[in-house]
Image (cartoon, rainbow, N blue to C red; front, top):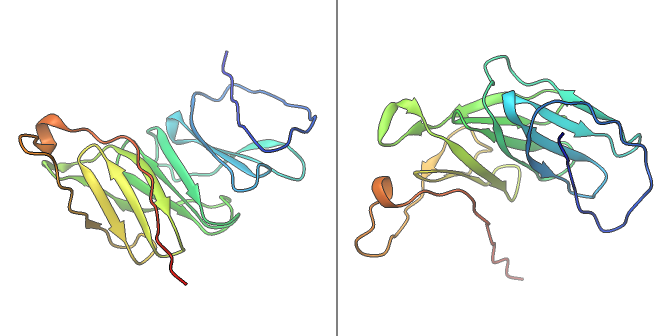
Amino acid sequence: TALLLIAVGAARAQAFDLKWGGLAHDGFSLDGLEVWTGEDGGRIRHRNGTTGTWTFQTTPNDVKDTIRRIHFIDNMQGWAVSAAGQVLKTTDGGTNWAVIWVQENPFHPLEPDDLWDVVFISENEGWILSFHGIWYTADGGTTWTQATITLPPGLVMEDDVELYSMDVVTNAQA
């Protein structure tokens, strides 16, 4: 039995038709109505905010590993990351997803890195997080640059540190 809980500001009575689809690893919503979940098997599920129905969205055939995180900046533009190093993007609310990047493991370059998080603050500026680092894009995910991480003395990224989650805080000044 799987249970998916999504907290929103106001509760509404609604029918919920649960169909087994795997394990949900992340849920994302901007408004509490439209909801996307990242699931195992490369699946992304969407809850329509008007009808309340859940449907699986179409991801590329080569996306088979767990979708770890999803992030949208509006109800049309979103990104997702997979356990196989894939960065996916949609510009139509998830009707169509495309793999726009595969992040290599910096310590084993022939292997993909295990991605855990994604955050965008605009259609161009975003970050992805793996066990081994944080990468930044200024072009919507076409290219990525590894961010510098300063560790306390004695810690080594490959041996001592694994990264799983991040928050991005911006300092907008008037």
